[in-house]
Length: 502
Image 1 (tube, rainbow, N blue to C red):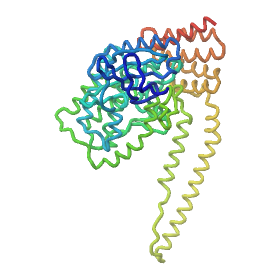
Image 2: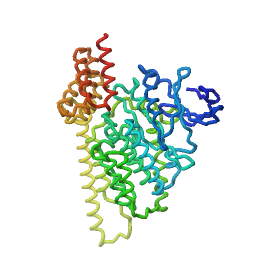
Image 3: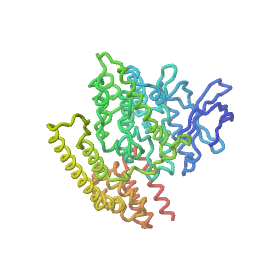
Image 4: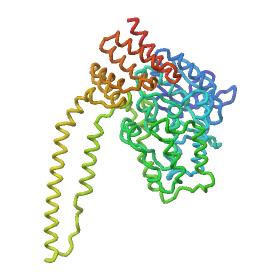
């Protein structure tokens, strides 16, 4: 999209582009008659190509415009012009929390952290009571006004994207570094998912780094789903125990174990500091924190990857996530190789400085040399065994993608099915989904409805249309009674309409 600076959108004169992301470009604009500055968010062209996009855009924009809260950016209007869809919003003069974190050489002062989290939690609590989720809480969406206001932006934008053709079959919407485990698995999201994302922000502000980081977005999502949370006090021992407890509860893997609401989270944070003098971060930690910040140029990739397309001006922004996460290498194999490396490094004899050589030391030197030879031999045998194991078992398994009978949980079967679908083996994918549905609790319909829809897609690709219709009907049936599953219910109906009309 060419820059719109200097042009006119509706009654607004576009002044300059403020930023560009995976979903939209943001411009500063001016309304001459009202003498008011505004921010205009222009959605990318490709997002408007989905079926019924205009109706969805108007529906979500109207919902966003009804939000009235001091910590939520005000939406004035929404328009379309020359195939451009855009929202006109309040202009907040300042920067983002992301900018603040990158500029800070040390973790933020506690007083500032508490204000940012409590104001953001207040905004979320209000929005959740209105029945609206954010779905993409991250520092780039938290605005810090020069007047001291903390303002949450981009409500509903992720929802608009989640309804497009790019996500109807399960593409993730969100930012991996701040994404809840259930969102990473493509499952039902709720207020607890937003609370988790805010908890990641709290963790980052307190410790100076996000809890999970890796070289690729998929690897980050895998860590959120499977790896235990690194204790905040292991990174910064001066953190009050009560604050650590709040962070740990907010970042529980199971949504039911987190705070029941953003207001409860906010109150818990109040209690964590009640009656305590809040210490400032130790200045001696500044070099380490600055080093951690420099390594976080990578999370910029994830911030921009919301997930359908990356920002074009990001040097590695071409990464996308086209479906729910699958892991290219089996975790056990990766762990095995890593543990073997660590063991070798830990047990290998350390080099000794050459000092006086005397007859009294000759026996000890000979013994050390013999021991070193034995250690080398043992490590050589271990290394050969590991290599043989990978050649005989690991590599064939990686290349074959596994079989449906190997998955032992709903999540594992779903990941296997999606991998098989991408490899063109829809028959095996159906088998994997059948196994997953056998694991599914018959009383827990809504959380597993997406499995039936995925099964319907696989069957349709095999031209087993009658079975596909049954699967999509089951998908619809399993969503009944859950307003949060409306997206999936609509998608299932669209697929049924296409199958019936063929």
